[in-house]
Image (tube, rainbow, N blue to C red; front, side):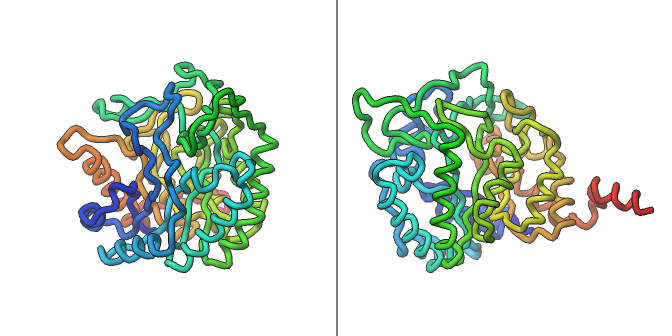
Length: 369
C-alpha cells in the first residue's frame, strides 16, 4: 500500500509537494479543475443556487499540460497516481445527453489518449448532474474542528439545478425560461452505459484506468436528478457494464459508509478482489444519509485499522489518500489536518503485519478449526 496526497489546482505547488514528501507520501492525486473560480470556497453549498464556481472558460487539458504536471510531480520526488474529476465544461452534454455530446466525446477521447501518453495512469470521475451538494461547513469534528455535515432536513432536495449548470458548477450562461433539469434513474444509467461503452476501450488502449466516484451525498435523488452509485452493489453494476481493468472505482470509504445498509467491510473486500480500484479516499464519518458528519480519520464509525487489515489480506498495492480532513485550529489549518491524517495512515500501513488478522479472516480460521 502507498500513501498519497490530494491537491487542488491552486495547491499544486513545489511547497506542497515538499510537504507531501515530508509527511511520508509518495504519490499525488491532482485536481486540475478550478472549482471555486469566482466564488468564495468557504461557502456552504446547501442552498447555494449558483454553485461552486464558473468553469465556462475551461478548455480541454493538453498533452503539454498533462506532461508538465507529471514531470513537476516527479521532480519533487513523487509520482502522479491520478487526476481527479473532469471539468464539467468538457462533458456537460455527455452528462445531460445534449446536442454537443458527440463533439464532447471526441474531446474526451483525445484527453484520455493524451493523458496516457503523458504518463497519467488513472483519471477519477463522478457521473452526476447535481454533483456534491447539500453540505454545511462548521465546527462538527472533534474539538470543534471545522468539517462537513449533511442533514437532509435542512435542505430542499428538490431545489432545481439552474440552467447552464451541472455538477454544481456553471458551464454556460443561463437561458431565460429554461425548464428545470430532471433525470430519472433509467436515464442516468443509460447515459453512463453509453459513455463507458464508448470511452473504456479508448482508456484501455491508452493505459489509463477510469475510476468512478460514488455519490456524495448518497441520496436516492437530489435536485430533481437521480443518483448513480448510492449503494455499494451499484458499483458492481457499473463495473459489469464494460468488463475491463480500465473500468474501475475511485473507492471513497466515507461515501460507502454513508450509504444505507450494512457494514462496509465485506464490500471493501469484494471490490479489492475484483482488482479494479484506481485509488482509495481514506476518510471517516459518523452517521449515514440522511444525517452524517465527516470526522477525523480515527474518530468515526469505520474501524480504519480493519480496513487496512482487509487491504493487506487481499494484497492491495495501490494508493490511499486522505480526503475531506477536518481543519485544525492553528495558522496552517489545512496542512495540520492533512499531516495528522497522513501520519495516522502511514502508521497503519507500516504496521499492517502487526495488526493481526481481520475480523472476517479470524472467523474463517476459527471455522476451519
